[in-house]
Amino acid sequence: MYIIPAIDIKDGRCVRLFQGDYDQVTVFSEDPSSVALRWQAQGARMLHLVDLDGAASGETRNLAIVSSIREAVSIPVELGGGVRNLETIASLIERGIDRVILGTAAVQDPELVRAACARWRDRIVVGIDARDGLVATRGWKDTSSVRALDLARQVVELDVQRFIYTDISRDGTLTEPNYDAIREFVSAVPVPVVASGGVARLEHVKRLQKTGAEAVIVGKALYTGDVKLRDLNEAAEEGE
Image (cartoon, rainbow, N blue to C red):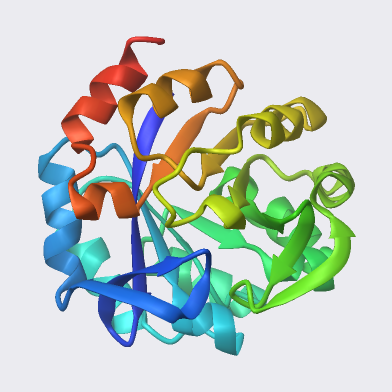
């Protein structure tokens, strides 16, 4: 297992939301690129970027910031938020984004997922964000009637190579991950799963290793200093 620091971008700044609520936002930096360099210096193997404005609006909004981060760091970068068509995916990959995350599109446009996976293979990741087991879309503003596990089983047939599973109720709460839900999700699909939401202590990473998750995205706990990235990396590597 490895650790992926999250950089959520809203209005050009590095922020964190509480349970995906856009009205409960904390700004941690005016310069996301400096944050990216900090995580790289502390041993990050990859960065997880989210364009929160793009997720809510349906089109990428922070491309200049994303590009500056990509130029600043040498480690792989993945990005989600507002990606709804092949043209946007192509543009992001041309900008050097290593993995593009499709979220809302997996619910609303499965043929886009199929076409993207056929063209870019493992550079496409499907992000499934669940609230009480149901898939949330549009930057978590809407909750669908689709069960997360049902969606995962459906879209994996589109040749999806990797999932990111986020439990919204745990995201930004500094409580703990939903281990049972993650374990169930990992068991439901035959491809790697990255877990997200709730990590606040080293023991959380150690317990997540037992779920079978490939990696874990960590956000707020890194920014508040509840945990250190180097310590998380060491805990994750102990199980490798």
